[in-house]
Image 1 (tube, rainbow, N blue to C red):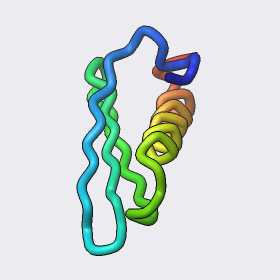
Image 2 (image 1 turned 90 degrees about the horizontal axis):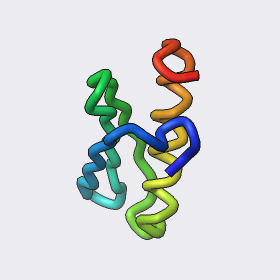
Image 3 (image 1 turned 60 degrees about the vertical axis):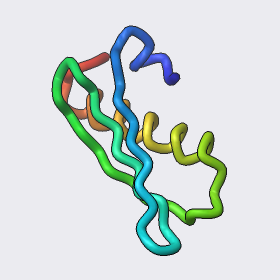
Length: 66
C-alpha cells in the first residue's frame, strides 16, 4: 500500500465489464471512493496499485491525508 494509506482501511472491488476491468477503491474512514478501469488482461497487482495511487491522490487533494 502507498505511504499515505498506510494506516487506513481500503476496500477494493474488481468488476469485469467486457474487455475492461473496473476497479473501485474506497477509503472506509472518509467514505471517499474512486473508480479506474484498465484492460482485462492487465495484472491484478498493477490495477490495484493504480487504484490505490489514485485514491491517495484524491485524499491528498481533499486535504484528508497529508
